Structures are given as C-alpha cells and as structure tokens.
Image (cartoon, rainbow, N blue to C red; front, top):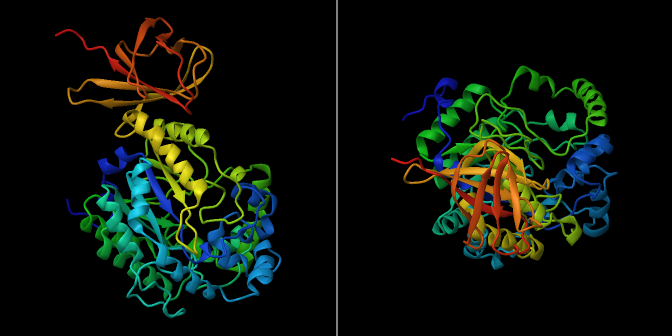
Length: 491
C-alpha cells in the first residue's frame, strides 16, 4: 500500500503485527551526558514539578538534561559542575565519551538485550543536547562537528538485527539546545523553547537521513515536532513508504499558532502560573503526552494507563529515576525485579508494551551492574513465562483476583487450530495449594498448565470462577503464569 501525506491515508496505517506481538523493548540513553552522569535527587520527575516548579527543568532526575541544568546557577548540577568540572564547556565531555567507545562492543549489548527477552531496541540517536551518534551529513550551523565519526547507530543496528530483534531510532525533534541555548527553568520555558529559524529544516533532513541510512522499524520522536502539520505528514508518508514494518510514537505535536505564542515570555509566565497551581492540586506520577493528529502508539512515561486501551501504547521508564546513567544511583534507587515484572504484566494485559531503558556509562560504554542484574532477572522470568506474554492480545477483561484477593492479570492467544488459550498471571505466589480464579465470566477450561514448570494443574469449574489445584507449593517468583486451554465443543 502506498501512503499519501494526508491524515485519512496515514491514519489507516495498521500497527504492524511484529510490534503488537513484541511486548518488550529496550531503550538506550547514552551520550555526552553519560560522562558527568549527574542530576539532582529530589524524587521522581512528577514530584520535582510539583515541589520545585520554578527550577524544575534544571532539577529533574534526568541526567540527560545536564547540558541545560548547568546553565541554571542555583541548580545542584551547576554547583556540581563548578566544583568537579570547574565550569568546563559541555563540549569537553565529547573526548572522554569518544575514548570510551574503544571499549564498546555492540554485539555484547545485543546479546544481553536478546537474553532479556526484548524483541526490539530503540537507540537515542540525538538527544536535547544535539550531539549525533552517527556521522550525519546534515551540518549543524551552530556547532561544528557535533557528530561521532564512528557509526554507532549503524553498528548497533547490525548487531541487534543479527540477534533477530527489530531496531528503532529516538530523535529529539522538539528540543535542540544548540539552536536555542537559553537556560530553561520552568515547564513554560521548556514548552516554548522549540527552535524556529533553520532548525525545522535541519530536524526534517536529519530524520530523513536516519530513515534512509538505517531503515528503522521504530521512529520514536520526543517532545514535539518543529514543523507544520503538512510537512510532518509528508515525513510520515515517506517513512511508511520506505520501511514496510514502520511504526511511529505519539510525541509529534506540530507547530501551531498556539505553540508560536508559547515562545513569548508573557505567555510563558501565564502558563507557568496556571501549571504550578494545577500540579500542586493534581500531582502526577509521570508524563502522558497529548495525543497528536497521527500516531501508531501512545507513550506514557514513568506511569501507565489504569485500564485497557483500544489504542496500542508503550510504557517507557528507566530502571531508576533517570534514563541516562546516574553515577550517584544506589541499589535503593532502582526498581525491584518484582515490581518491574508485575508492572510489565499489567501493561501487557491492557494492550501495552514496555520500553525499558538502559543507561550505559559514558567513560567506558559499560552497562552498570544493577541494570544488568535486572535485565538478567527479567530475562529469566520471560524464559519461563513468555508464552503467555509474547504474541498475546488483551482478553475481554484485564484484571481479576483470586479467592484470597491476590491480583490476577489476563492475556489470550489464538493458536494454529483457531482455539484459544487464556493466560492468567497471579501477581505473587498463592499461599494454598488450591485457589480460586474469581469470575463467573471465565470460560470452560479443558486443561491448565503452570507455565514455569510445565506441570499440568487439576481444575474444576465453579459458578463464581475456576479452582486450580497445585500438585506442590510454588517456588518464589514475581508472578506465576497459568495457561488455560479453552474446552473445545464436540464436532
């Protein structure tokens, strides 16, 4: 099918089956900011905007925003930069980052990601600081040579694809600090900082270059898009017509008259007054971007949707409060493997994927041990339970409980014979050998299997659900999956 640059044509683009089946992908934030590896520690990004709004953009837990944070003198990052780096230009982090590449082996990364159960990998190719991880031929008019000579994007794409995974690119379209270097403190400053002038053409040309060179299966834009809607639609049509398995996210709000007004300082002050009051009264856990005119999937950040969504979505988060590597992180700052797995199951049951971030070190290109441990633990769980995750779809309801109130999540999968298997994930470990999956709507089940061990489970249908009887106590696990094969009617 050939796509035209119209909303009618582009909104007919189906979500590729591979993406709907995948469920789990790896995000990689890695760049010059991974050398200083520093950010303020005032809690989650939602807590920072609630409690420290006037300087929140410079005091988020995101180390990848270090280039801006050091421009705000009262921020912790600026103080750290003065004391440790003696106010050196941000550009000075380029040489140690490039030296660290001497130790980088993209094949090792790809092996680690594949073993975690990931089906796709999305690399940050250019973040807000504008530094490009590929030898771009689109010249930055404000920062000469602001690219790597080594083709990091190409090497990782090859390694990832060699392991049978899809490869995608992240691009910061809405923010470009080499084009608009003004210090950003508030959300109003941030929203109004999308560069104009030569930047829209620059961003369009670079993203087209990424599409032509690497044929990415995912184009993951961030913040917004700096062109008008029609130019954006032209880009989508080019991408879909170039890459047959293409998918785009939702962070593509185009330039409008309202966004142009946000560039004005008085309008930003009004916005900040209203936003500050709202966030005090209505604290948010993370970020859910507004829906643009066109996208294939939504991307809540450090939060999830509470109910099953008709629109495909992807929860994205780091393993700690930051995406980029933070040298100050301790074990207590990282999400536990149990919470990671149970949140993932909840996301999948509600039509979502998980894009879990890895933040490698800048000085030696190593993935830190706490992150490796979580990838390993996640991979071990997926190796035993992935049948009920990969390739599944939401059931008629996502949630349930056992007789003792333990939370349950459901997925389902049609098999080759057009029968269906229902999967029930008990989020925890049942205390008794016999327990009830509550729900009068549960169908007649012909056979039940414990996914992790392969043991067949005795069952009986009740008016208020299905009772499963275990042959022996279950071992500790973040969640236990059960495959429930629907009873087939007699011919």
